[in-house]
Structures are given as C-alpha cells and as structure tokens.
Image (cartoon, rainbow, N blue to C red; front, side, top):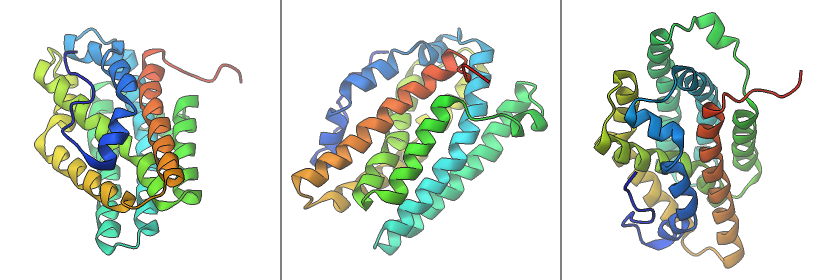
Length: 231
C-alpha cells in the first residue's frame, strides 16, 4: 500500500483523532488480508470467515448507531444515525447474502454461525460505550468503522483487484457515496466535541483508538480463521 497515514486533510478534533491512530492505520494497510484483496491471493476461506463475522458485527453496530442517535440532543443527528443503522442492516442483508451465495454458504449455516472472540469483544465494547459512555465517547467509538473503511476502500480501489468478488467489496467502501456519508459523521463529531475539557477529550480519543485497534484485529481474525480455543 502506498497511502501515507495522516493525510486526511482534516483539521479540528477529528484531525487530532486521526493522528492518534497513524501507526494503527499503517498496520491496517499492510495487513496480509487487505493486501490479499488487491493482489487476488486472499484465500477464499479467509474471506468467507470475514463475511460471516461481518454480518454478525453489522447487526450489533446498527444497534450502537441507534443508541448514538438517541443519546444526541440534535434531532438531525438522531435522524442521520437511524438512517445509517437501517443502512447497516441493509448491507448485512443484501451485500452479505450476495457474497455468501457466491461462496456457497447456506442461510442455515450463516444463521447458525457464532460470533468469534474478536467479533464479540468488539461489539460488546461498542454497545457498552454506547450505553454507558458520554455522547462524545459514543461518537469516538463508532467513528473508526466509518473512517477506516472509507480510507481503506479508496486506497484499495486505486489498486483494484483481479478477483471480481474482492473488487465488489472494494467498490462498496471506496465510492463517493460512502465518502459523503463519512464526512457528515466527521463534521458532526467535530461539532459535538467542541468545548470539551481535556479529560473529556481524552476519553473520546481512548474510545477512538480502542475501536481502531479492533478494526485491525477484525481483519486479523479473519486472516487467522479465528475461533474459540476451547469448548
């Protein structure tokens, strides 16, 4: 990957947030799962694991987005996050059903798939923060899934993939429509975090860094075909 971490063009607090994960983002771009998407070497079983777990993740992420909307005092934010939650479910149902059909996965198998350790840990952290954290912390927690995927999608789209299935995934997150959606969330986050004291800003940053780490871990779990070690 040739993209340089940190070149987002963002100022304000979200710019500070991105700078706090530059090293994580470099590791994301260099992960063999993502490199395998663009050079076509990613084993099908790894992509299959990813799609099954991502479907489970998106259901819980949609709940976290709904909670983010409820926690906001801004009616427009409530509407936006509710729309995004519906969109996450739509992606889970349509995009993933298409991939799973291509991969020969029956609906019964998909519905019977249990959350892997990383999936459960990531979604549990999201829902805990969305329930117990301050509203700005909630934004910090949900933001990496938007922003990292948008940045990764654009970078991978420049490279392309020889595998149509992987190119379809790349096009989903590398397009302008998704980029516009992410910009709206970034602007909202800057506004909501304006005027926070140092301790509050630190909590938002901690949530942002934590879920950014989980983003790397999620791809790594798919690469390693992660399962429960016992039981």
